Image: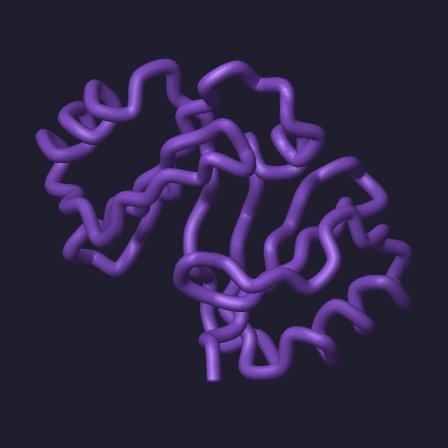
Length: 124
């Protein structure tokens, strides 16, 4: 079951500049990470009100997963497989199967309207 809305993922041209822009709005860096396998750098910035953004800087934009990750909504789940199965039954297509990430286990689907949704679960 979905526990909460986690973040919105967006693409930025310059990660450090984007972080500085969001810091003036009250966001703080929760986590920065390099994703060499995706040719990307990323950061999660959180606001005191609980909202969060995942900022993605693509080094060359050539990895096939760029399409799915560059703009997405993310939800935290207590059962990743169950929630993905529910979405598939509603017509969503799995575009990234269950994967172990830096922070969580995750999967991405494309909904019937073409939006990308990340479902994540804390690692055991």
